[in-house]
Length: 145
Length: 112
Image (cartoon, rainbow over all chains, first blue to last red; front, side):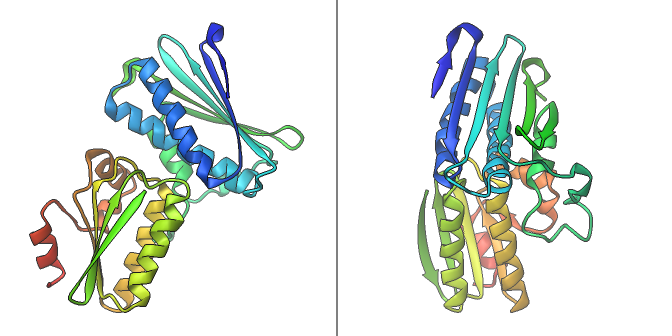
């Protein structure tokens, strides 16, 4: 793990294995504390990043420990921006089903992206066949509701 | 994550302790499947000591709920914290799961 204090940015690169989610959890807690987020907001960010990290490791990198999932936590006065990057070529956002629809409601999977969108203020994807997929998520400090 | 399981009558109470994320999810899945495969008709999942649970963990609980329902069994949640209740509300799963904050009431709901 490399920390770049001068930019207020924490960078974490981990092998695509479930056990590293716990390390991610620790870093999120640190970033949320630096931001001064309350407990509720901290848990929202925590869950959103864990969902993004799990997607990156599982779907982007196929749970291949040889492929790294990369996380950047950019801490600013007014917002926390998190970048999650994998080695995958991306996916069709339109094809992601709505977990609230009757046909998907009882499915055990398919709620990760929905939760990320619900819990964060901004979520956007940058997909590139050559350089991988990156999701950028933002939580603002003064939009705690 | 630690799971303490207590068998009772024809069911079991699973007390989870810790965040149910990462490799804690397959651990939960195994614990639930062991109980269902050994014939449990109902499960109470006690979340009092669970500060965070991801969507994969939710999926594991949904799968168990459906399996038990197929055999006219039941799965209920106990002592879910506010943030987990929020996630259940966001995903509308609060309309699927019964959530209790009292063990005795939870036991009565499954008829034990």
